[in-house]
Length: 226
Image 1 (spheres, rainbow, N blue to C red):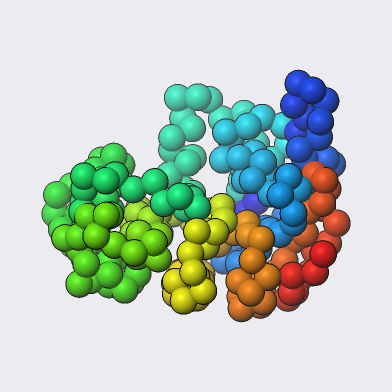
Image 2: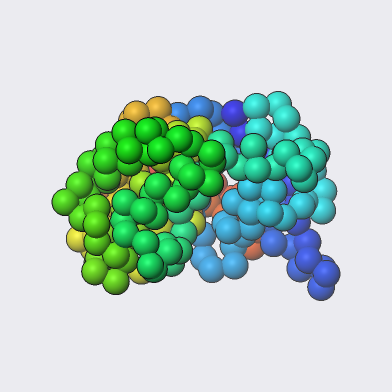
């Protein structure tokens, strides 16, 4: 499904953020990308999302070169990928229900679809009883679960989560990881970046290790090793 072919990304100062990376990710995989700060993890995700262009090499999604997609068609491609961020990025004046519904509205879904799908997603992320709470009324872990619900509401093929537990305590971290595992078991490809050894070890799936922009390890069922 996803293929990086000898991909490098250098910025204007010549510093390599990603250097000669070749890797493939199959449908329904759960992949953890690990490495120290500055290792190139986030840049790798931005290249997949076409937020950055490679200096060399190509990124493919289902045999389509991502960076050849016309600007006016990029939104169609990005709808195939749900994104989750460390800082949640919820709309503060909308409830949990409304934050998730907003993603459906932006995709042009009908009121009937929204009314049908949003409650189901709230139950999936264990927030059925918090539907009408605003972000300020939710814990950090609950806010992240709303963000995950928003990311999956339009049934993307892939979830990309950049340090999704970075601001959470151990209990909330565990709950978020369990939800991501559940989403993966339902057939969605999940790619996360993390510094958290406990998260990687709890997932127990494929681990890609980055160091100074290079892919230095790729373990099919690995642990956090640096």
